[in-house]
Length: 485
Image (cartoon, rainbow, N blue to C red):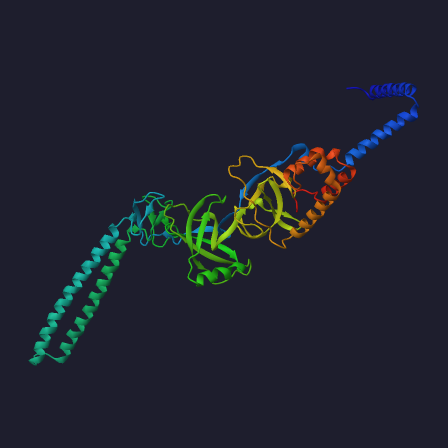
């Protein structure tokens, strides 16, 4: 690395050489130093003037017409949708718990299996309950035999009472015994029924259609009735629902459609909003608004036949509220925004881009409807508009069809009258100062045509001073990029 001393010495030597060169030039140029300084000042002034001199359009002069991509306005349907975040919520989620105690002797399902209501899930050792049922049946049989015997005795007592061979008291006592035994038999029958039900509980079945989760017990585990931990959780997936929320401002439009009997379509998309998972319908609206968030809950029902919706999955919901037909549609990328509002660049058959103010209607992720300013068939710029200005020439690669003549701009549209007035003023200015120049250099070009503009650009340096001044005024009047009309 050079030291400061060596750098200082190099600079001193360079200054000495420069001074000697200046002295050498001053000695040989007539007028000496004064003439040299005058030449330097003129050079600097020329650079400043060249830099500040307004050009027609450097982008056009250097690169010519701008290459753009276009699209044609189409007539179609615009769907008005409301977007929300939702959660897949099963219609039924059941934790299957044992109803009787005992040891698990069989697991009859595979984790993740789809089951129907009534399908066997597990078996609890039934032998203790089988014995209890047999005991209840034996008790019932014994008491029924006692009842039958008491009924026979009651018949004999009745015959003896008719023959005055027994007392009224003995007959009444026997009659009460029959009633007592009848009650005992009914109690035994209930015990038998309870024992049978408990025995049935040893066959653990699914209460709903759905998918079983991970098992929570294993073979050999002892379970008890009503325990906190279940055997398995069964979740209903077909059909399923999605819960989502919308702002309270949208509820009136939805209620109007629902009250009219319309079935509103709901679409569920994945997290990236690129894949449609399922299509369903709006099922119900909650009966109150959440005052903390200003939203209301809604439930959409989906058949979910292909199982694309999974319980507790987050999805993007699109609720179709209305479909407007016969709308003028253009890609969203065509819309530009400036100080005067929204506008597009409309391309004419001679490939000239003209600013057109538009009024937007509803939009979706791809297209936007045009309430006024365009008609179907108009060609608009969708890529490259940031490099354009009103009246710019464009190139359209890979054009397969000729460009149709654009529709007329609506009367009174924002900026339309001003631009027309400016164009008329500039046309009068060019006619006044440039008529002779056009006649001389562009005799075959018709004013206002692309040929005339091309000829003007090619010969502008040869035009008269008055015409050059008029051209400068025109360039200033129409200066500015694609940021506005």
